[in-house]
Length: 396
Image (cartoon, rainbow, N blue to C red; front, side, top):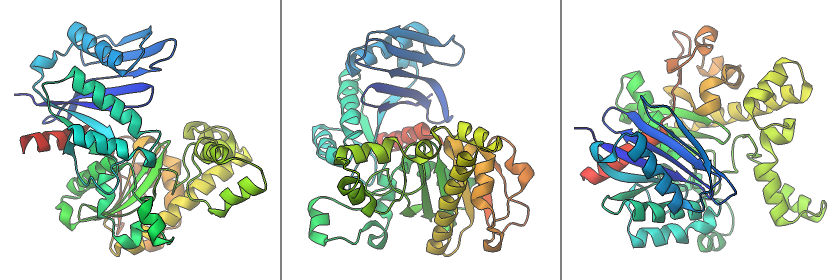
């Protein structure tokens, strides 16, 4: 009998969903409702064997969005009552230092997610809004919160603590949390399968490269270091985020440039990264411009590769022994030049890329035969990872 999980990723004005067959590892249906609360929302629903549904209509809140979604399942399928639905999984960005695994959602858990909102003000309130609407829509099913940060709570204090006043840090919950945890967990586990070894025996580096980007060093299935910090702003160069930057730049921008704290926040989160360097945050556009010889695009890719190489080198040192490196997410899976640039010159560290394999598509090894450290492209499946965690918790 099919076992399925309804996976929800709620944003402030969006609702993304996927009905996942846990055992087959496939999507039975998926969709998104965007621009909730605006003049005209855009809603889409897709499932194998049906014509994709797309509508523009007024959808005032997440409750109404769930109503639209249920009508699509009723009208177009698959029928939820026949899909073996065992639970509803919710992506929650920030679980703080409290949640190191998926948990059943009750009123107390919901209150704790709300309490953690100051650490993720753009995400947790929206995630919680989705949880509340979903609990009202699916009252007869267990609801499970799966946290982006949970996988990284195994990082040791030497890696997650910042060298600031300890009392201030404790009072305001300042520490490295890391993000993209479900992706890093899925890919590191899949990588061990591809290597044909138990996860407990594998040390790997996972590079999740998309509009948001992060790297994680994984030893024995446990995160031991990651590039994002207290917020998703830290670490690698991203689509619109700066990544690591001297904290003194913030003071300089305030005192000398006269920017407010909110203006600096917008600058570093929404007007930096590839967008700030080139005028576009889309790696495909940047690569096309670089191929055409446009200097600022060429330089931007060099900056991206420089940051990646430095992170890879640091993680090789932290792990001591590294078996494999995996590229994943939109850029990591599809941008062969980025992968090649990130690994260029690392042959002496045991990383030898095969150009022909790197130019291919899909899940595959892209390192040369005999490379001491294998390199793979592993498509991430965050919804499947969430669904598996939900099913495991529900099954007990």
